Amino acid sequence: MEEGTIVDCTVKVGDKVSKGDVIFEIETDKATLEMESPGEGFVKAILVEAGQTIPVGDPVMVLGDKDETVPQSFIDSLKGGAPKAAAAAPAAAAAPQAVAPAAEPTAAAKVIASPRAKKLAADLGVNIATVKGSGPGGRITEEDVQTAAGATSTKPAAAAPAAEARLGATVAVNRLQKLTAERMLKSKLEIPCFYLNVKVDMTDLVALRARYNESGRGKVSFNDFLIRAVALGLDKFPIMTGQLAGDKIKLAERIHVGLAISVPDGLVAPLIKDADKKDVPTIAKDALALINRARADKLSLDDLEGGCITVSNLGGFGIESFTPIVVPGQCSILGVGKITDTCVPDNGNILVRKLMSLTLSVDHKVANGAYAAQFLDFVRKQLEDAASFGL
Image (cartoon, rainbow, N blue to C red; front, side, top):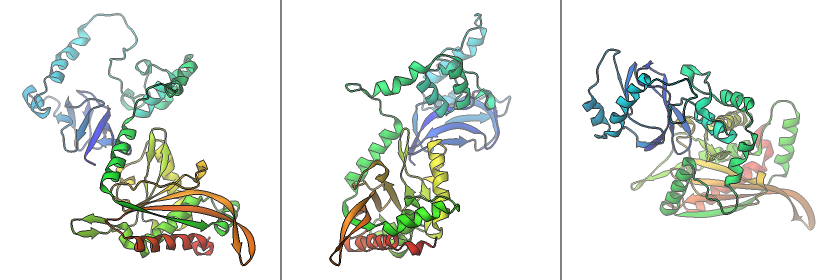
């Protein structure tokens, strides 16, 4: 992580914060994360604004003792001498002196709300400045927005996002889409890839999964088997975990496998940690937890850092095969297509088997074709040997 975007500040000048309190929500290239205060004190100055992108290491807030006076010159120096925010402070301080009848908060007023609450408010056509927050410090939650939406007739406004995507319209690119585009362009420019494709006979594994899911012991998906097979393959062919570092290849210390997950704003690929040490049911539980956190926008940096490979499965959308783009920082990515009934010749007979296409994109700086082919063939054999999963 080299930079992040300030989504929201959850405190204001004058508030007391303790070590570990959430003071900012930060959007990275793959997730919105909560930033906790590294110390305690009273907020003397907030140096950044919502929507501002800053590099790692930049100062964001000044804390001090309750009665401590922080010179404005010091605050300005932390901001790089920017006078704009400093000029706004006296105006904000003078605001309480204005005499006016009680009114609804204006859109310009500071609103403390979670990013998902803000997005939901926009989708439902709710003016979030009018919503009363029930969270800590008056913070507005999704439930508060839903309550407010239920109290007003806002259903027509909910169609706005769909209308935005009509032919001829100009659709705004969100930060996740923008950063994904930057990373994929970086991949295309810096990673010389080659591509391998193989068909896997999933007939026995389809039957095994059906039996297990009907047994009442739990539920597993095909992705769980794929992650297990890939992790075992990485253990046997460790160069596939590597990254070029100068004139050497640095291999991963642990095997973490990314799972591409579709979320409202784009795509994320959190990691199944130590996947080579877990059986399929354990991987299934971990994957479900990741999917729930990803779609609730609750992923942490630990969920995203240190991947060796990513599994991207578009079979559920009817895609038979595709060529995925390697995630920067990883050696390869596996594209998975749908399982199709296919006529296969067998000693003069024709059998109907359930075949699935796998496409492996590989960084040629790290692995050569023969080595990667052995890895992919190992994964294929693992998937075709259903009994090896021990279910």
